[in-house]
Length: 141
Image (tube, rainbow, N blue to C red; front, side):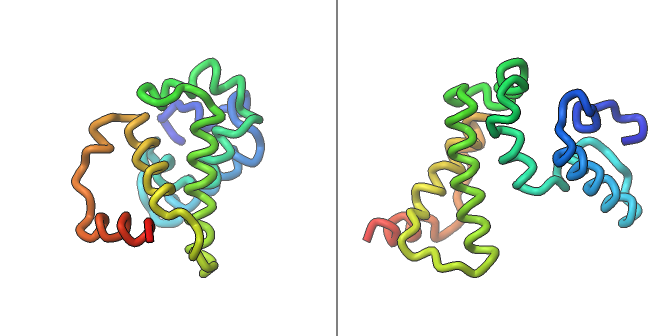
């Protein structure tokens, strides 16, 4: 990442699969002739990168530092991983045109808000898109 030193490119921190995801994000930026910055690399990483990063394989990383990414949450890797995995499953179902009837979409929405609030409580208070109340009501029926 040029002059940007980051844990994102440290083999001592990330496992090979996650390092490949970072390399792919960097390569994509270069193909688009965009500056390679930490923010752009982070933004270019797939959701699966983050679900793996809070998985049990990174338990030690969680204990030493990753928990600080969610300073206002439950502070357990298992809770964050559960929320993120449920969100990811819903995202994948939608992306692959799978039926979501019977999936508690309102609960997944709450998972999203809880994760956002764990990072920054103000994020959970951001204005909601119009119609989100209807989604909550429809999910209860």
